Amino acid sequence: MALLDSSLAHTAAGAALMGGWAYFANMSHPMPAPLLAALVQGALTAGLTFAMKRLQEALVARLPGLSGLLVPPLACAVLSVAVLSLIHSLAGTPEVLATLALPSTVATLYACAYTFRLWTRQNG
Image 1 (cartoon, rainbow, N blue to C red):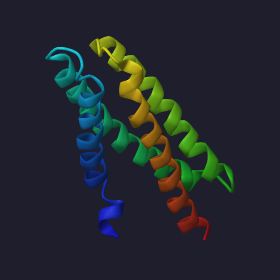
Image 2 (cartoon, rainbow, N blue to C red):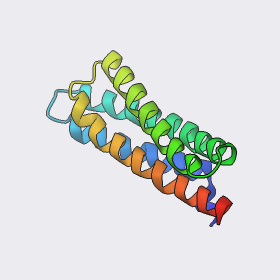
Image 3 (cartoon, rainbow, N blue to C red):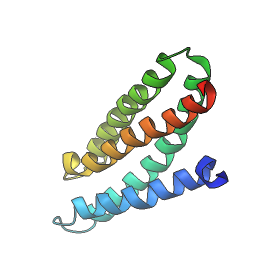
Image 4 (spheres, rainbow, N blue to C red):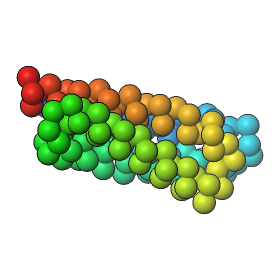
């Protein structure tokens, strides 16, 4: 169970997987576009995963009842889409929508699952 609670494990896995996805989503474009998209996405995923995990832990602990289950994943989904859209647009990622499709979906599912785990542990 320690691995499931490890911020480092969550962060590293997210960065590697989503960076790889960004490379794949942009590989029809000439280099260095796919590589840049992968590096940007990997770094963003690492930072966002760490921030979202901490945000969920704080919100679940502070929000009473059902709001502690619903608000954290919603906040994480909005944060993830907003930050990824902005930074990829600024970085010139050619396939922004394709690049964001998987990471945004995974981030939202991750937020739902992790929040549920925290919430049931607290409200058991």
